[in-house]
Length: 508
Image (cartoon, rainbow, N blue to C red; front, side, top):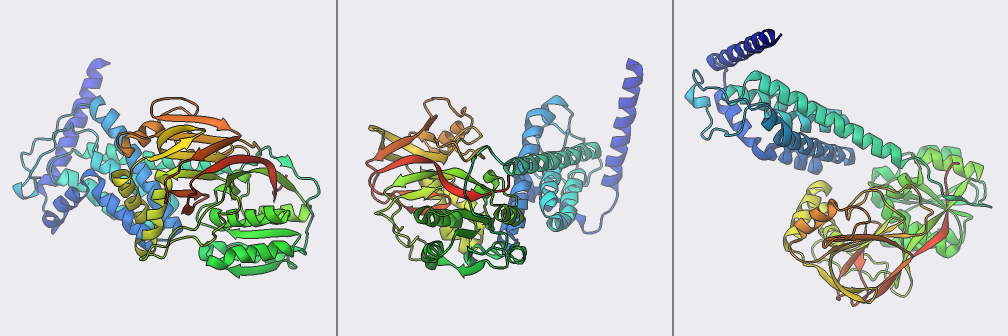
């Protein structure tokens, strides 16, 4: 048996070398000018990072999600190659006999040959993109294949190295797709929130006013045609920008139920209006991010229509910060800044509240996104925050602290570290408070916190559940973020949770 294995391995190695030599001996018109440069461009994933940025700038929201999925697939493939692949099969690089000098790289790789990291990265990124946006995947496939072939063409890999790397890359892309789909499916499973008694049934929409935030883009209109067909007597109001809070308040004052179509920030404004008017809220997801709708278990507008027709609703908890947000000073270049100015009243959050690194990242992203697109703006904002920001010195529950990030979630979030992912229930009535303490550089601190357990106490990160938290001695001009909105914090505030405060329609 052992002799047969050695014979099979020897035959495979000879076949691999013959194919390598055949590529080296053949003339490929134009390839000498293109393939070595293409391979160098893919070093350290630079080519694919540029492709992700281009997709983010020129693509749609779906395309930007595809770019992020491609980047995640590339990261998974690279981690697998560098931690397992290269050190498990310690295969020497091919001898360069027969490879024309014009094709050879000026600096030869020093790592082992199997599998090809360039091929894995190329096919991982392309597969990840293709699972979300097939058109972009089709456009990238020839580039990925050319990068993989260039590794044989320049003499740094055997053909089998390239095939194995490509297969590993495809597998990484499929794994990321499976994880992403699992998260999305989990987030649309209804939780155990308390049923609301007495929510009016509106089978034809009479008594419902739906406010649509036109700033949310085409997504805000998606699915509304079916809503109007099923709820023909509902009133529809379209508005945007500074007019949104006033329109929501007016709609709430004349309606039995306030409907809202937009993303998380828009839903936050509608929830505030509904709370103050004491009426139920009907959510029609229509923004770039719909965390609240997904955690509530709403897959789309059809779910909300069905719940309205049947009078099915639940009572959810709401996070509150008092006093509420001050308007952010407008940037002279971007015009950014919120004009709500509810400093004398409380502010509310359905998802999250934060002070520190995330609000700063949000501020930079809002400034740059109109110029370069959301994806590239997020990358630039992260680089700026990790490079230049300082911890915030404040007082928490009477104790002085320096923090890179103070996070409070409306309910318990899954996931370790300071950036959790989703909730099983919106009816808990507790704040999920997480802090990354200051000291050192933000990058290592935030990374270390990301690996900390959800309820651990360490020199870097702590997490706990609270009913309320007092925050004082906040430096002037410190930004805060709530449900993706950006504002300036007051000098002191109180965070607390309001159990069962808001009635929201959802199918049983």
